[in-house]
Amino acid sequence: MTKKPAKRKSQKKESSKPADAPFRADPVLCFLAREGGATELWGMTLRQRLEKQFAREGVTDAISPEEVAGHNGPVILVREDCVIDPPLIPAIVKRPDFVLLSDMTGDDCPIAVHARGAGAAAGLKAMEEGVALDDKLDLFVRRPADLNAVFWDKLRKREVPYARAVSASNKDEVEWRIFMGTYKGATDLVTKYVWPRPAFYVTRWLAPTFVTPNQVTALSAVCVVLAFWLFWEGAYIAGLISAWMMTFLDTVDGKLARTTLTSSKWGDIFDHGIDLVHPPFWYVAWALGLAIVNLAWTPDVLAIVLGAIIGGYILQRIMEGIAIALLGLEIHIWRPVDTFFRLITARRNPNLLIMTVITVLTGRPDLALELVAWWTVICLVLHGIQLAHALIVRARTGKLTSWMAKPVSAGPS
Image (cartoon, rainbow, N blue to C red; front, side):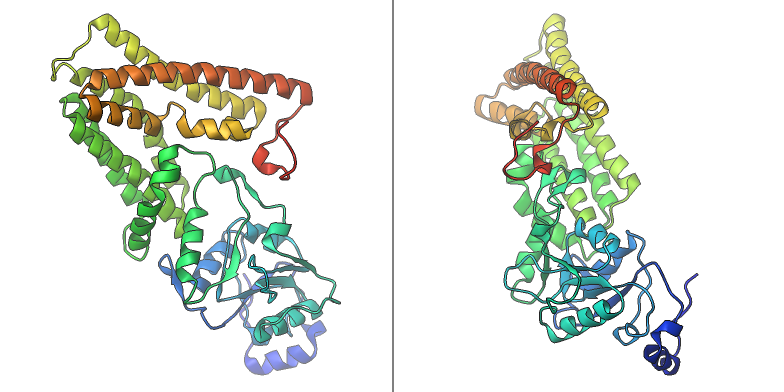
């Protein structure tokens, strides 16, 4: 257990003789209060947000600015008026003698400094005065764009991380930047282009409340069951409304978890478990509901259509699993064309879009499901070619690398 900080009287004594203080190898935090540091984003003050982020990397103990001079060990100095993208936190924690600057050109006052001794003292002074550090110091000074952190594997995206000061004038812009930073880079066109703005407002409204991401996921599960029942009853328009509500809530729960830093292993299993299991049940209910609206298929046609959709869905998922197991890569982030294909491939939201447009425009839910079957088969063939090509390249080169993880000038391999 870490010892409690000594009283101020003894701190002054230690400050004059830092060598007498016991050495501590692991870093401690030191927050510097600045104007704007009390600004709340996503239901938390900026300091609370930073404390959560560093706690996830095992850095929980903190000292005051007055204790920095007497601390015999590494200190991570952080301004309270700033936000830092999650991928940058490990870089700060694991890299001694490191200085992180803002991603905003022209702002040279450090955002965070990991140093000890003279480096920590200089970082503290620069932060307090709002100026740049002395170039003569032997410190590794970088902006986010200068770090090898543009590829975030967990979210399958390529994006320069953010690190910047927050003020009343840019609060809305920063909040939007944080929100969009939680999006996956490879996803479907509805999630990528339709849901962001409405999901932003709903997520921002929920963040300061008692509502948790798992509660939003639970409500989306209710919508899954309701859509299933409505499709079964032939109430296709009502069922589509419920289905789209589920997909919207499926976006909100993940964004709420990431913006409020409340993601959990159970929440991830709960959310992805529902996503993985429910689509085939919707297709079956849709097909059986055709009898209610006098559009029922013969048993043979019913078996062919559902076999194509459900079989294709399962096989595509298996192919994605094979890619991860044998290639060590999520297949949709190998090349830019693969990421584009993820926008429209036969998954829930693109299929739901087909079902909605055809049903509303033609009044033919049977035709809508037939088109989904055809699109699923086409996508299955394309996925097969995609996977075969990847396996051949892997055998020749020994390794596949995502285009998102490469320098801008490099091509896929």
